[in-house]
Length: 261
Image (cartoon, rainbow, N blue to C red; front, top):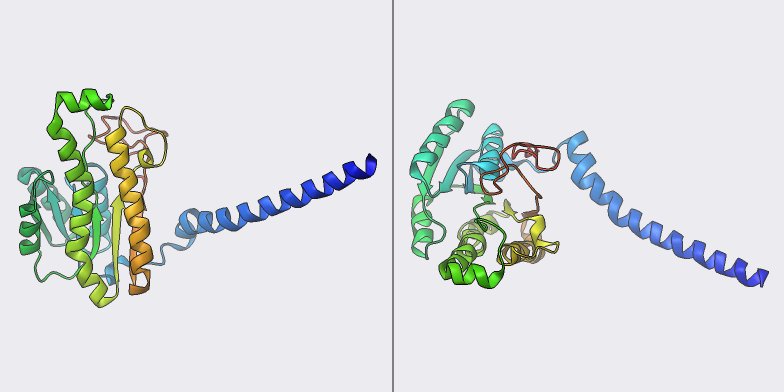
């Protein structure tokens, strides 16, 4: 009996060692790459070398505006794309004056059809775009059962898919060919933790964010050897207009908290 217990103890120790090794092998590199490395050494990616211009969708407030400011801080010229022309002009002047970079604006509603992408293609023709931030998105006005949401506004389901999914795929298709040709470029897709955790009463929104994660992961696999970096960012609660959280806190930081390194 004692010998049997000793054997089980040894096997248990071996099993725990294997599990500990696997955790260290996976977790420690992730911690270094995403936490310690960027803070201690800075990013190994020089965004300014990817191209002269950065394109940011949903860029008049929140996370999109925060990305635009940090990219401008790094010296990139900007193309800001959002729905409200007046807000775009205000943000463009603010960023241009502060960082001394050229800022262009394009006003489109991403719940529209293919015509909006033709407008973007035309107005960005000839620009050396090295960074694309697919940030635009919409969510529910409040948590709601799927059928109640559909019965209240069937068009909303089409709009949320258009803004959260079609914008990502079509903008990527628009700017990725030039990146592949020059063998460098960065595409940042804004997803959400809603896409990876249970999220009832926001089912369609969370499903669109799960799509962004999967699309980003597989696209990175397809084009990694072409010099393209594709990142899916999965923030939790952030104090933005969309989340309706007005005051930043430990549990809901401001959009400026996670700066581009």
